[in-house]
Length: 125
Image (cartoon, rainbow, N blue to C red; front, side, top):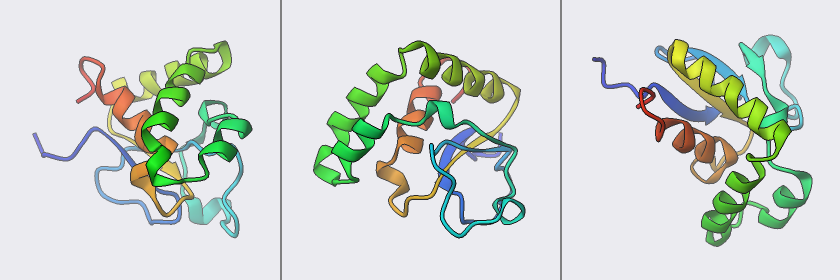
């Protein structure tokens, strides 16, 4: 075992790294100033992104992250989010998965919540 996480969150602006595996953008909007070739993505799963209302309420305020994570996990139970989350689960079963976001604060982003959620599942750690 290499010690690299099988599922991780990262910035879409960063170049592909060894061990990234499938690079999937999980933002609803395309990142500002980024070309598709520079993004070097394997997919874009905008349906798994938080709702506009939740994203607006959260505003990447660190003190709201725990509540954001709780509300976001609730949103992911809705049909569209659940289906998109299942696609990510399927990818995670095939190999390493890097969930990408445009935010600078990756550790308090939806990509981090998704990575934690997927890693909690048996066989994905």
